Length: 397
Image (tube, rainbow, N blue to C red; front, side, top):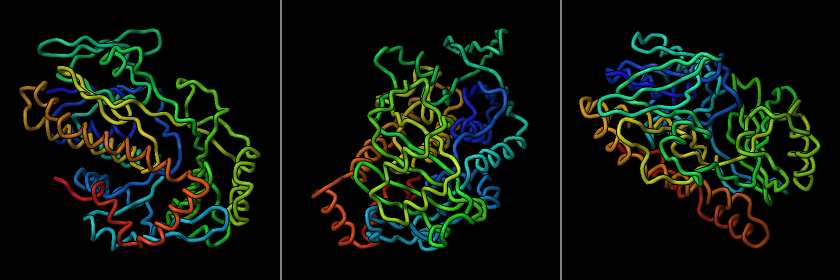
């Protein structure tokens, strides 16, 4: 059996590796001529690291990743701690797998190293998928490398081509199925650890909450740099979905104004960023089915979601594992395998999408609603707060 995977992001690489381990030959078609992972840090929760361990990638990642000791939640205007949930060994015992933070480029490197040891996987860079035609016993994929057209064939096609998925566009063929603007923008930066106060260097994932905004930061790469994500409402950002990227330069003065009424420690921390990159946040509508015949979707192509549960990469990794299991169970009936894959994944991914959206609303509350949220967090305590993540992180296999 041979699979063609469109896209070499985290979801595409993990899917290729999982399918190869299930016995398939795999061709990865990647539009970019050079693989250079955009962005900065990514949180890998236990539902993702459990799968990466099974694929032999986790041990490679441990060279680069950091195990955070805790997740702390604070109020932005005065720094009041609302909750502190222990991670590290206690969380690994609870969920059976570690929580890690890692630079996206290091995660990509770990996956590529594992793929390089799989003789059944080939990676075609600079190859853009232009369309496909599905047949009873195969899928033909049309692609372009520069001006040259190339045709590939496989037993199945996996669209792992992200928010603007060409495969999804052909699969759904619905003009209304476009990325949905959230009205929020993520601003990302990497700050040298030496440029911030010791409290901001601690091996902890920090979440600060405020009116129409929140801030996340944690150290990366042996705590040499601090990954920062500031997300706030921005009705003035008029970029179209096609322009949404991680690489647009941002004006530091804009971030400074958005957080001008936060506590001094946060203002000083933000001011230490050497540069900012902006990323408008989009999501996709929930699909009842991800597959049609021999064609299916994974990752953002299937369920692009807002980042408020830090589950974008993790859900793509879950997709990869579920798809490989379904194909291994029915290698001679790919349409049935893809139906089983959708049955295993669609409802769960949709729930994560909904909860991510709701979490963003809670993070950005103001006035009496924010006060009620803060009192609730302090009243629940760490144990009951951390139990709210069991449905995502616990082993369901």
